[in-house]
Length: 171
Image (cartoon, rainbow, N blue to C red; front, side, top):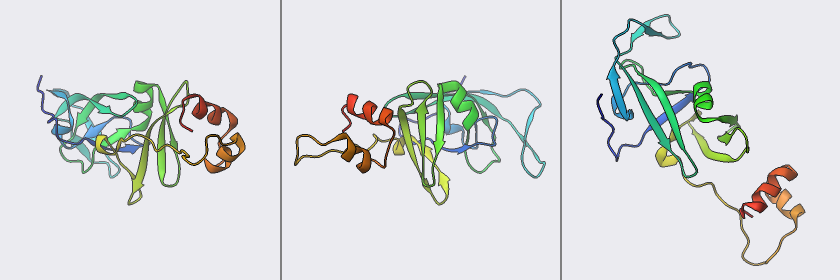
């Protein structure tokens, strides 16, 4: 087993709803890896078979949780590291909620937003350097604000979401 990831190297992943495995062209994206000895290949859209050179594991550290990535395929000839949305959801008990310019990774049970990922150039890019704390709305001029005002300020969330924000002292 080989440990190759540098502590200072930001790990970047592109969530892909069509990928059934996590894969990366860069072995430095992996915490640990082992050479792949099988004969399987990754088949891409044009039908080409690409060689799998290693199998590895990694993690994505975010403010609220560390996410696990298992059995990552090291494919030297792909261009970008792809994160299988379905596999990530199964491994971490989360779901993805896609919007025009942002996606949220939410806890499957509590529905809490664990990670917020903004799109750049039409792509959602997940990386530890972009996994910052979620913004919090607050007022300093008044001590209390009605639930109706917060409901409007926050884009009309459901009453359940608003109660969760209040109970976690986010508003």
